[in-house]
Amino acid sequence: MKVQIENGPAFEVAAGEDSLLRAALRAGFDFPYECSVGGCGACRFDLLDGPMATLWEQAPGLSERDRRRGKRLACQSLPLGDCTIRVRPAGSEPSGLPAAQRLSATLMTRRAVTPDLSEFTFRLPADPGFRAGQYALLYPPGVQGARAYSFSDAPGEPADAGIWRFMIRRVPGGRGSNALFDQVSPGDVIDLDGPYGHAWLRSADADHPRDVVCVAGGSGLGPMLSVARGVLAEAATASARRVHFFLGLRTQAELGAAAEVESLGGGDRLQLTTVLSNPTEGLAWSGPTGFVHHQVEATLTALGRPFDAYDHYFAGPPPMVEAVQELLMVRRRVPFGQIHFDRFV
Ligand SMILES: Cc1cc2nc3c(=O)[nH]c(=O)nc-3n(C[C@H](O)[C@H](O)[C@H](O)COP(=O)(O)OP(=O)(O)OC[C@H]3O[C@@H](n4cnc5c(N)ncnc54)[C@H](O)[C@@H]3O)c2cc1C
Ligand code: FES
Image 1: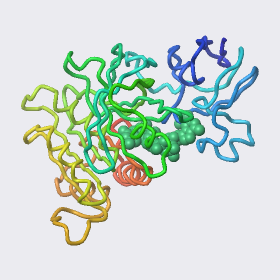
Image 2: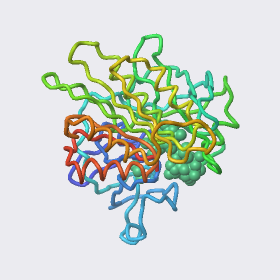
Image 3: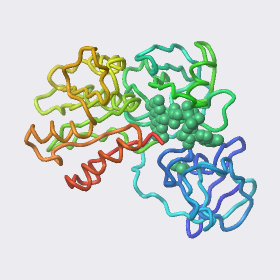
C-alpha cells in the first residue's frame, strides 16, 4: 500500500505493519508523535482519500472537537489501501537516530525493585540500538494495543548489544502491565518494537558542558536511570557533566528505587535527592517530603546557578511532568532545547 502525503513524499506500508505512524517512521518520514499509544494527540492527521481503519476508537488523544473535525491518530490508524493524508513533518529530529525494528524478544530475567516495580531484561535476536532516554513498545499477550516502556539502561558494552532493560510498574487494574507480570515468565517470547521517543540524551556542548538535571516520578525512574547512566559513562575529565537526580516516591516502601540510583556510583558526579510525597508515619524518614518539583526548585535555587545552566530531563505521571514543565518553561524561562521529557499517558 502507498501513502501519499499532501504536498510531500509518499511511502510504502509493508504487509504486517501495525499502524500508519510506525510505517511512516520506518520509511524515514518525520511524522510528529510523542507517546505512540493513543494518549497524547501529537500524531493527529487528516485523511484526504482512501480506506483507513481505526484501531482504538476511544483513544484519549483525540478530543470530541477533533473527532467532529474528522481528525485521526496515526498511531491508532492502519491504511487498508492506497491513501492520501495531510500532516506537517515534525521537523525536530536529527537524522542518524537508530531506526525502529519490531522483533520477537525473550524475557531473560525479572527482578523486583520495589513491591510494584520490577526490572524486565529481554534478549533480542538483533541489535537495533537505542539512545539513553528513549522507549520501546511492548506487546503484552492477550491485550489490545502496545504499551510504551522506557529503556532503563544506556547503550554501552558490546556484551549488552541486543539486551533491552525496562523498569515496569504493575498498575492496579492495568491490562498491559498486569499481563507482563502475570503471563510472561523468563524464557517466554513477546514482540518489542523500538527505539522511539525524543527525550534522548543530547551530547555535551563541547565548549560549555552543562550539568544534567533528571527528575523521575515513580516509574519515571527507568528513563532517568538511562540518562544518568549515559552521562556517567562519559569520560571523567575535569569538565565532565554531573547529574542532579531528583526522585519522587510515595512512601518508604518504594525506597528500593533510590537504591537503584545509588548503585550507579558516579562519586561526586551524581547527587541524588529523594522526596516522599506520603511518608508512612512511624517508619524512619529524615529526608524531604512533598512534591518532587517543589524540591527541584528549592535545591536548584539554593545551588545558586540559573536554571538554564542545566539540561533538564524528566519523566513520570502527567501531573508531575506538567508541574516541572510549568516550573522550567513558564517561570524559569529555560530554552526549549534544554528541556526533554516523556509524559506517561
Ligand atoms: C513514552 C512512555 C514511556 C513510558 N515508560 C514507562 C516505564 O518506563 N515504566 C512504566 O512502568 N510505565 C511506563 N509508561 C506507562 C505505560 O506505557 C503504561 O501506560 C502503564 O504501564 C499502564 O498500562 P496498563 O496496560 O497496565 O494500563 P491500561 O489502563 O490497561 O493501559 C493504559 C495504556 O495503554 C494504552 N491503551 C489502552 N487501551 C488501548 C487500546 N485498546 N489500544 C491501544 N492502546 C491502548 C493507553 O494509551 C495507555 O498508554 C510509559 C508511557 C509512555 C507514553
Ligand atoms: S503519538 Fe499518537 S496519540 Fe500520542
